[in-house]
Amino acid sequence: MHTLCARGTMKPEINAAVGFLSRFLRVKGHVNDRQVQTFNQSLHDILSEQYKHHWFPDRPCKGSGYRCIRINHKMDPLVGQAGQRIGLTIQQLYTLLPTELTLWVDPFEVSYRIGEDGSICVLYESVPGPMSMAPMSMAANSPSGNNASVGPMVDSHISCKEELMVLGRTSPSKAYSMMTVSS
Image 1 (tube, rainbow, N blue to C red):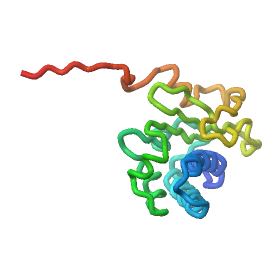
Image 2 (cartoon, rainbow, N blue to C red):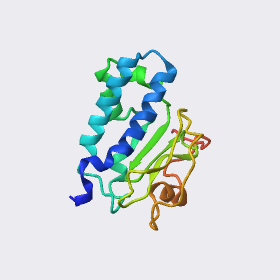
Image 3 (cartoon, rainbow, N blue to C red):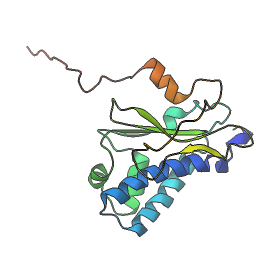
């Protein structure tokens, strides 16, 4: 493991991801402040443990798929685990969280997309190096992240988010129709 991969270096990124998800629990209600606080701490601990051997600040895209939080027809197991710790079922989590959510938690950047065809929005971004703990942008209180401003490129390498934008989607859009033929 690289010396920069110390567990503490991922704290702002994990905090951004956890804060983003927990805002949905607050906004939709049915979850009290104590439950949200427990969810936050549980998810933070789960993600920190999960990512500790998959955090590469010198190569942010390495391990990106492993760190991606995905909710679609299946609940992300890490989010499900944190939800269960506060007494929420998977079905309850589906009602509180977006039905289609992709959340990328990478060194120096946390971004998300709601819906298969949604725009990719940056929640957190920082510059690598000694000042990496100073965020360049942070989404405001709304879960939509509309108040986030995007700063300059993190480094000269293509980011994971940009790679998706350049290479395109890997699944068909919802408008895609499939015809089946039966005999």
